[in-house]
Length: 187
Image (tube, rainbow, N blue to C red; front, side, top):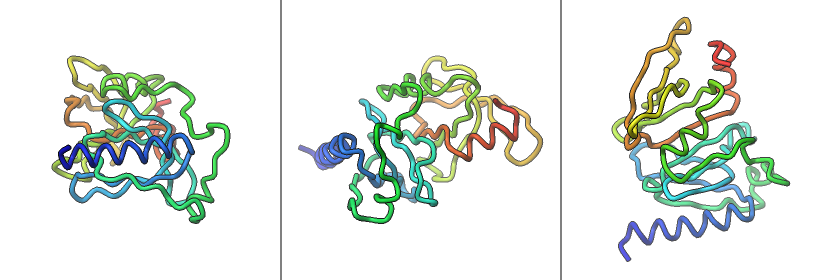
């Protein structure tokens, strides 16, 4: 096996165990200068991993989907750690209310693109801080048409087209995006 294949095989094994046990994990990615992502695994498909994201306040706050091909390492938290104890979950409380299909980029985006729900789409390969926030207008020919929110001034939308292969991460739900929706009257 190649190094990348072996790395992904090990990461998938840890992820599968963590999904079954509902354990907190830290996912480190190969994209330079990106922060590790902590959370509880709620599902994964061929191309994407879906986690209930751990906030700095030690609670679960929204969801993050990360591309498998950028996963460098998956580590389970020690169950006795403060973060793991703070996020003890029972009966699937971490699972999104709607089914999120993590099979492909198109199915992932289609799953979260309803009811004018704002999402954050990251295209971090060249710039780890590159993020677009808005609502999905259309999904056409492996491109996302996003009606973005201008975060610096009064609400106004600009249409941005993002090829699926440029998307490295998708965030949805959570306090920040819910507050943004209220502030810009998206919902």
